[in-house]
Amino acid sequence: DVKVTQSSRYLVKRTGEKVFLECVQDMDHENMFWYRQDPGLGLRLIYFSYDVKMKEKGDIPEGYSVSREKKERFSLILESASTNQTSMYLCASSGAGGPAKNIQYFGAGTRLSVL
Amino acid sequence: SQQGEEDPQALSIQEGENATMNCSYKTSINNLQWYRQNSGRGLVHLILIRSNEREKHSGRLRVTLDTSKKSSSLLITASRAADTASYFCATDTGSRLTFGEGTQLTVNP
Image (tube, rainbow over all chains, first blue to last red; front, side, top):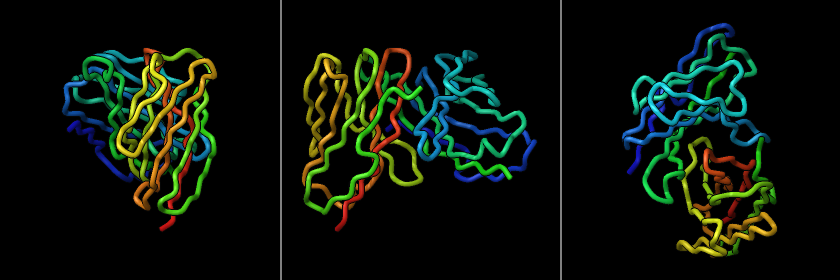
C-alpha cells in the first residue's frame, strides 16, 4: 500500500513565524501535491511538483513556497505565517503507471492554527 | 478554480437506503474520480471512470458519467453507518486534478 506521511497532525504557530510542513511518500511517485482545505471552499491546490527540484504553482500559491530536494519528500513552507493561513493542509502523491497514474494518495493532513 | 461541483452539499439517510451524489464540471476531462474523506482525515480514492466509459461498478459503488452533460453521479447502495463521510469528485484534465467542494453524507443507524 502507498503510504504518504505528513510530519504533524496538529500544529500551532504564531503570526510571523516560518513554518515547515513535511510530506514523505514511499512509492517512488513522481508527482506530489499540496492542498489546503477550508469549510465551504473544498480542496485548493497550492503547489505541485512533477520531479525533483521542479515545482509548479497551483491556484493559491501566494504566501507559500515549496521544496523538493529528494523524490520522496515535498515540503511546504510558510515564510511568514498569517492568521488567514489557519487551515487543514493535505499532501498527496501520484505516479503509478497506466490509467491509474493520476490517482492521488493522500496523507492524514496537518491542521495548522496560526495565532 | 473549482471545476467540480457536487450536489447536494449534505445528505442524511437511514442505514440500508441508497445514497446518490452528483457532480457537474465545466471542461473536457480525461477521467473523473471519486474520493472519500472521513472527518479530520485525508482523502481516499474510491473509483475512476474514464471519459469513454458510461458506467462503472465497484462493490456497493456505482458511478455514471455523461460527458455530453458534463456530469457524473455516485450511487452507494445499501448504505451503512460506516459510509458516513464526505465524498468528492475530482476531474482529471491531464495535468492535475480539480476537486469539488464535496457532499457530506450521514448514514443514521
